[in-house]
Amino acid sequence: MIQLLEFFFIYRQEIFVIVLAVFLGFEVIAHVPSVLHTPLMSGANAISGVVIIGAIIFAGLAQSWQDILIGSLAVFMATLNVVGGFAVTDRMLEMFKKKKTEKR
Image (cartoon, rainbow, N blue to C red; front, top):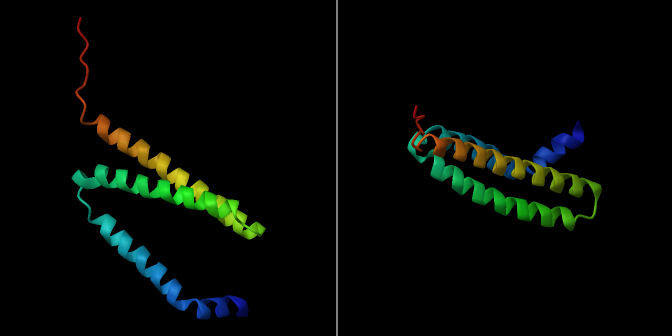
C-alpha cells in the first residue's frame, strides 16, 4: 500500500493530466452531433493506426516482460479500436446508400 501511495505522490501531475484528459474527452465526445460522427471516426481510426505502429515498435524494443506486456496490450487495444471504428463507419455509410428494390 505504501508503494502505491508513493507512486501516486511521485507521478501526481501525470495522473492529474490523464484524469483531466479522460473527463475532457468524454465531454467533447458526448457533445458531438451525429452528422460529424463518421468523419471523426475516420480520423480516430487514422490516429489509432499510428498508435498501433508505435505500440509495435515499443513492444519490439522492450527489455523486460512488463514492457512486452504493455506493448502487446497497446497493440491489441488499438487494433480493436480500428476494427470497431471501421465496422461502425461502414454501418453508418450503409444507411446513406439507396436500397435495392426487388422487381416482380
